[in-house]
Length: 458
Image (tube, rainbow, N blue to C red; front, top):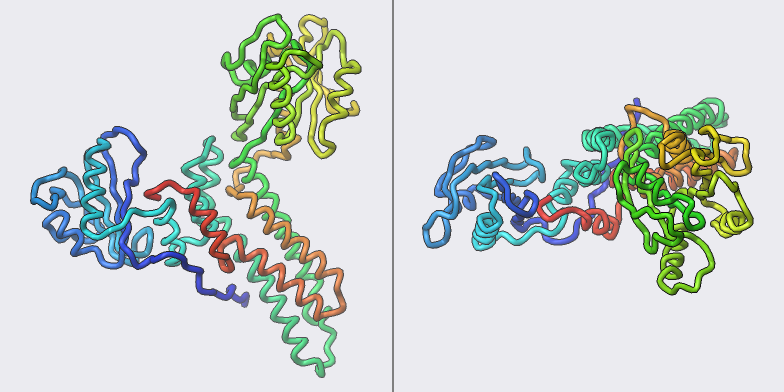
């Protein structure tokens, strides 16, 4: 029987015994607004606020009463007693009319009754601390809110429902079971048993590595859904970078003129290709210039290139790659993925084409007519490593780092055999790295970084 990962007390910071309150709906006007309250015992709080004792998990029509007994608003009062609530504590939700003034008055009344204003992400943080969510699920809450595509939203829901966490837990169980066998062998050295054969250590290690690789690939795909791909369009002036941005975005985002140097600053557009957000950045043409403003734009171009995932070098299809283009390619960071795009094939009399055999993957297209632009979209997806799948889950960079470290530790463990002491130590370090994903072992500063990015009221 597989062992369950050991539970460790989750780190706490701040006073989680305090009652907290915040406006849970977005700023601005709306038909309905919600103030959320969470604390240890809130029945008395609810009675003071509404003059009524609410029933559990039933919407109750109520007047929300100010300290002078006047009515602030009329709406619905919902009471979720602990532990069957989002935070694991008593939770109240005040559903009122969604005007900013009304929401602020309701929030002020809650603060008068002894609540304090919640910190960003504090409701979800309490859900984590009270065992309602693990850390990966808690992060999926904000990923669902921030999802830029339908595919990202579906993947975030899978993570929120625990699919990613279950995969990580299954890996932890395999690791712990293997560690237990190793530790038992170390504890009883007098038993002359060939551990590697009797415990099938290498077979267990192979199965663990295979499953870890599969989880890593699904997480890497989810990372693409969350963060997308940052693509910089670079090249000499007047090769059609702005036209290509407009064509990709389906909108007139950048000014297009026949005059070289029209683009002086970066212009950004985001589009979706098979659910992946592509953040495309049009930049100033790269050339030597005495124009001070244009020089500033060129400096910004190189800064954007340094931050890019992919650089698309545009050249004029009528002239091909010249010495100036080769100089630009030579200055690109060596690790950076790149594509060469020959634009204006409609003027050069060429057909759309994707040449993977060239020194740098090369596409021939026309930004003006759109011919060949789909080849560019698909090439960008291939560079990103995307392949359509319905079973990916949203993952963050820290999740990928933890999975990568786990893989590295397991590889090192295999290299230590047959020295079981060193083998066991690498397995222990692999378990520690993997457990940070769900929060079984998490430092306070990590929690602060994660939950500090949430909205107030969430």
